[in-house]
Length: 150
Image (cartoon, rainbow, N blue to C red; front, side):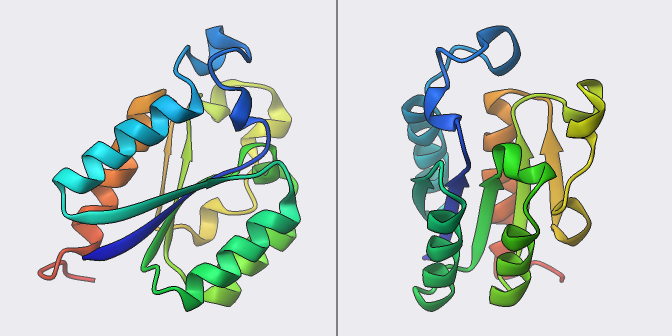
């Protein structure tokens, strides 16, 4: 069974209450449960981790490389626009990853339109709310399928 790590960055623990007109009413627990159900249906082992601390996210990525994780789905939150360290950790571990965002970051404030991760990601899914995460789980399953042409 392929192992996938679902990483959530800062302030995503506030989902459901934080700016629901932008991020929706689903909580992080709701999103994790939906992703877990989709992953199980697709034959993936999915583990979720959220932190408001950049260091904790880096440590989890470093551990993932040793734990047999094969792919990362990451919503880096505000670290998308600021964290060279997160980029370096993803590159340093050589873990393929999919960047995901609930809102369409390209239709928001100018500073949100730049990502330190997008150019080294397998792909970016943005703007579809919770469906963005489910699309990422589907893409991970397709990427990890034994017949996938890399």
